[in-house]
Every structure is written in C-alpha cells, then in structure tokens.
Image 1 (tube, helix red, strand yellow):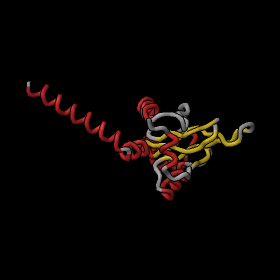
Image 2 (image 1 turned 135 degrees about the vertical axis):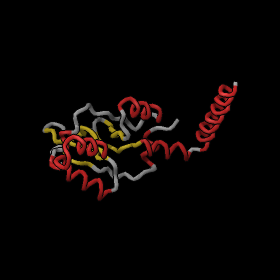
Image 3 (image 1 turned 60 degrees about the vertical axis):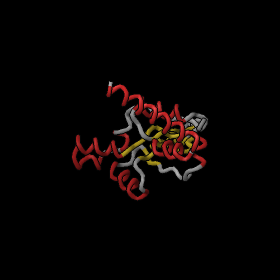
Image 4 (image 1 turned 90 degrees about the vertical axis):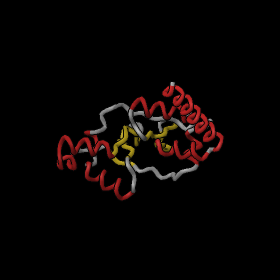
Amino acid sequence: MMRVGDVLRQKDTRIITIRLRETVAIAVTLMNRENVHALVVKDVCRTDGNVVVGVFSERDVTRGAAAYGSAVLNLLVSHFVDRPLVSCSASDTANTVLQLMDEYQVRLLPVLEDHTLIGVISICDVIRHLVRVPVLRTRVVGAEFAGMTSDAGHHSG
C-alpha cells in the first residue's frame, strides 16, 4: 500500500510558501518564477511560530479575477484562505489522500507531522507514483479492461 511518505521520498523536497499578508501579485509572481500551480500559505503565530493555514492556487487567482478584475492583484492572499485547512500526514495512504482531495475539491495537500510542514502532495504526485508501480498499474488496467468489457455487454444487450 502506497503511503504519502513514499511519494515524498521520490520528489523534490523544496516547498514554496507565501505569507498570509502578501498580495496576490506577489503570489502570482512567485508561482510563475517557481513554475508551480499553488503555494502553501503560512502565518506567524506568537506561540507556534510559522503555522500552515491553507493553500493558495491558480484557481484562487482565476476566481478572484472573475470577481474583481485586475484589482485582484492588490488583494491579500488572506482574502482567499477562507476555508479550513485540509492536510495529510506521511503515514496516510494514497486512498486517504485521494478521498480528501475529492471531498474538499483540492489538488494539493500540505503534509504535516506534529503541525510541522514536511512536504506537499499533489494529485499529479499520486498519479505519477501509481503509474510507476507495475503491480498497481496492472491491476488498474485490468480493472478498466474488465469494466469496458462488461460495459460493452450492457450496451449491446
């Protein structure tokens, strides 16, 4: 069974973050410069230091542009971090991660251990890892083929 920690060991360990009080313009510039689709958002808490509070993504920029036009660039990232943080841990399975992503309609999860950011996992990371595992690939392709065969039988009868 694939775990989040397995995926993190195979990818770049660099995590791109942004502060809650930065502007969308700075976030867009950072995403463009780092060639990423989302940033982990942190805030400073006096008792805990840097705390992960959310994720800011291209989707936020798009929705902001639709609502505010070019003025979105002057808004703070905090304006878009308005839902509870959804995260996972290194011991979580791929199924758990996929269920969280589906339930909360997100494509990237911060990976936390004892409230400390240790990585990020995206839907692409999970897919990439699953494709590399030959046993899983065979099972998935076999299941899809079986599904196609049974679907074909249902349509012709």
